[in-house]
Amino acid sequence: MESLVNKNIILGVTGGIAAYKSAEIVRHLKKSGSSVRVVMTASAEEFITPLTMQALSGNRVSTELLDVEAEAAMGHIELAKWADGILIAPATANTLARLSSGRGDDLLSTITLAFDGPIALAPAMNQAMWRDSRTQENLDSLIGNGFTICGPDSGEQACGDVGLGRMLEPIDILDSFSSLFDQGVLVGKDVLITAGPTQEPIDPVRFITNRSSGKMGYRLAESAIQAGAKVTLISGPVNLDPPSNCHLVSVNTAKEMYEAVMHHIKDKDVYIGTAAVSDYSPIKSHDSKIKKDGSKSAMVLELKENRDILKSVSELKERPYVVGFAAETDNLIDNAKKKLNHKNLDLIVANDVSDKNIGFDSDDNEVTLITQKEQKLLEKQTKKKISNKIIEFISRRIND
Ligand code: C5P
Image (cartoon, rainbow, N blue to C red):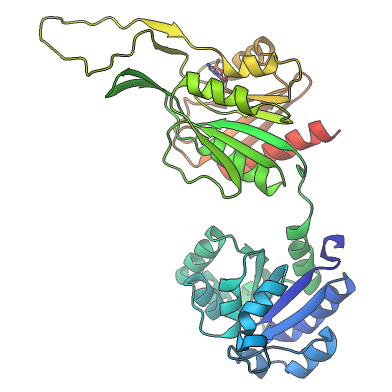
């Protein structure tokens, strides 16, 4: 838990029987080198006294939204500015519901709205309340908004029920909370990623393109940013929001993508080409819409081959670690290995696009990572999890 040294942590305590364990959480936080300020909801005070938490944390416990002792009487803003991280343990079903709907009707909920860093919640409630679909929907929404959920555990509950809903043990909560402050595996690294399709114009209203949602590239950008990398994302036209903290360069054609890559490649540590670049583009792109005059039953479109961006990057004198993607319908591994060699790549990520349940528009994927020495299958899982594993794999190779 070294990552908690010198961190300012707000421990939020809400009204559940597990609140008695919050005292131990304060002790662990202090032992790991953090400064701790405890914020309690009104119902938490029914379970454990502010005096106990004050004695353990060595700081005044805050309970009121409007606090005459806070500078400008805005304790929530002061506390949100002070904190490096927030841990709410226990987090009751009511707390999850209020936070997921963005309520700011007491000090703790308001701080979470004003705070812009990592927030972890350790749920604690009766097993039926935990299983309730509304609680599960609230959790999904909280996770979607960047909250980290630690637990819950399963076992015997204070009410006598047995099931999932017990708060995790304090030491396990601290383990997972402290990992939010771990230095990322790509800290100090510059990563360039291409994503999405390209569009090669035939005339102002028609183009040749490839099937690609861009999801894999965008998820990889997100994972690389979370791992601490500086990320430039060169993207063809997609319907996705770029991850925050990334430098997005939007392009349309393969030529524009090639030029953008060559412009940004200098000093990059890693290049990941997920883009579905058009292999060919029309030799002539008409300035005005080609009319259908009814005299021809066929039309010839002359195409020229586009430059292979990935291969051009791997041929650079000072090349980064180069990663390509192979979307194949047949002989997945053999074709991917051929591409690995032909394009002189460090790593190729092979996926079978003939399987309708993965790839293309899906949120899931199953891929095989292939290098000259290794072959590793990442079984079907979300593109986000696959991305995290690819980034981890790359970081181990470049940090060795
Ligand atoms: O040869 P193929 O198109 O199957 O190779 C796929 C890999 O090559 C992907 O990583 C893709 O981004 C990259 N590529 C490229 N430039 C091209 C064609 C493909 O960078 N013109």
